[in-house]
Image (cartoon, rainbow, N blue to C red; front, side):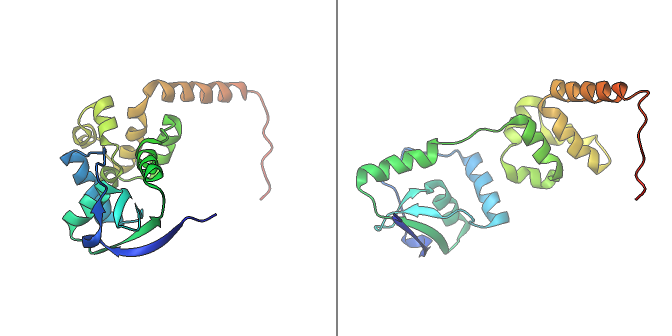
Length: 180
């Protein structure tokens, strides 16, 4: 049973959810604004019929600061208890990254676009200042390669060992070449 609809709303008419417990640092707000500048407001806000933002209060703050006039919203009509439960669920229920898959996923992200991911804190924690880390690495493709290494060098070494073991196991094996 569908209990929601998507509508465009004027940002100026939207209200922050009363008592919303979620907060955002100035630094994270800037990252959010950078993402919205680059990609637009691609994730609708979740609101109730009173224009109170159940999910997306921080995005609303960013949208206002950026001067964006209109945004897609998912309008839900729920009892107050369910609204509050949804507010918490939208902010709390999150997955986490599989670091091996994340390393592979990051291969195609250019360094300037990396800043849009919000992951730079992960790299600062693992390898220090990201700009300094990449400053001496050239040519450009190696930058991507080194992003992968910075997560877990031991995992990379283990993969290389597995590849070497496989190659060594092929010694003496004849390989039939394709006629294509």
